[in-house]
Length: 80
Image (cartoon, rainbow, N blue to C red; front, side, top):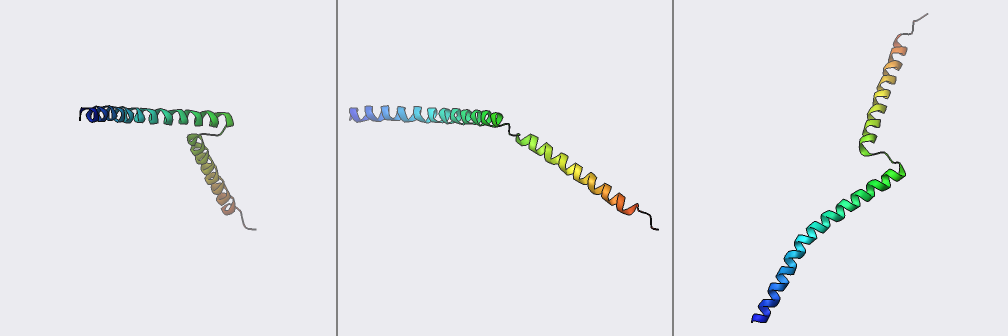
């Protein structure tokens, strides 16, 4: 009985340490993968999400300005 209890205690300690370590290891792996992703993106010179959003806003503003200029030109023509 004491041998089985000893084995169960050791096994429980291993599981307990494994769960703590598993969470730490998984967080560390995620951090490493994110940094590697950032390095690859930087090397490929791909724009970040924020940069893409800013560029999309600039393009939409330019499109609006072009539409307004086209409307002004159409309405300002004088009839002969």
